[in-house]
Length: 194
Length: 362
Image 1 (cartoon, chains in turn brown, orange):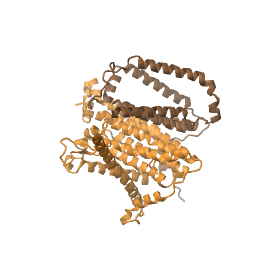
Image 2 (cartoon, chains in turn orange, cyan):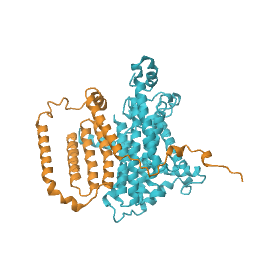
Image 3 (cartoon, each protein chain N blue to C red):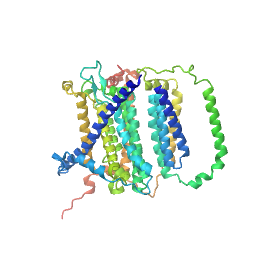
Image 4 (cartoon, helix red, strand yellow):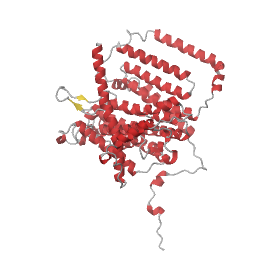
């Protein structure tokens, strides 16, 4: 009973958080709603005994929101009149995407994969089953190829981001820190006999 | 489970939380006192010595003063976030203490097996601490943004960059600990280091110990990494517009983070509640843990009195160009050493050496 109560609490809060992200006028507020939503989703993972996934969700997603903050501060031009302007123009495309997602969600939930009979264990495992170890075992054996491909894609994105932003300007002066650190007294100081 | 049982459980939880939160708050108060005295001694002056004997009542007087001061909210600030920001800074700093194991107890022989003294005994405790630690940045960010002041905003942006740069190397340092202990449960990590100081992870992981402690220093925005509030450049960074109790909340969070980093350094690298040699086991484990943590708090203060503030590009260089390759290299070294014996029999001595610290392999 308690578990169901917590489920409804977390689920309702994450839906409210998700709505807040879209509906809040202030971009900062919607970022805060996003954090709130992630927290409640992590709570749902905890209820499923998936504490590793829950913590990773907080660590990675909520951590990444920090970068979103920077994005809001540095890049977004917040202009309310402009925000409303394109509403009708984007409505058909957005509506179609929302409709497709809705159909997909309904199809997935009614397909029978998520039935209580087909899921191997509905109840909780004992305390000796370590979530992290089990995920590691599957991830590095059965799904190794997919895992490695994902890693390589991330690496490519990483290198790409660096290549796009890194440029050395010839006319700017740069400090060579190791040179600065390695400086000795003899290099700078000259004793003059007067 | 009846209502009465639930009420009793809730009461026990509340007591457990109080038993952690109240000492933490007191320690924070007296850390400020110790800090002022120690820096005073190091700079050959007295430090606070007026209020009470040896100035011991100074923290209480400071608290009272801050409590009575007016909280000023700037006209153009975003009021809601301005008020929420100090709370968002403080909550992660306190919540992280939930998983810190302060020792093992049999409650004077009432329990047959030893219980770990922690509010929540998670088996992903290490990840939890890392995740909650990275949340403390949101208080700073919100404070910087909501204040509607350019100094505060620059402070917040700096804090973000600092957090991103140092969190990565901190995470890799923790991965090294994981590879030795084979568990993310903080109590199991401590148990893996039982049996004298030659079992402590500071020996095989000495560089990682340095990286972790220095990154912790950077994460809690202590000198020499306090560019976030560098008063020469950006006045006080994110706390420029705060006064009274809300200002105090920020420093409470900062000192709380400092104590947490000290405790975790002891738990991860210095054997937690285990005595350095078994002959000293008659002193309770919790005392050992707190003594070791107290030493690291002293080191934090020592740093502050010794080092000048880093220049911004120097700090970034340290995080990305020195710590990150160093930690990555150490992860690789540990991994290769662990399985070297299986690849080539002549390298078995490497596996044996590292296996001494890896209880999960035997």
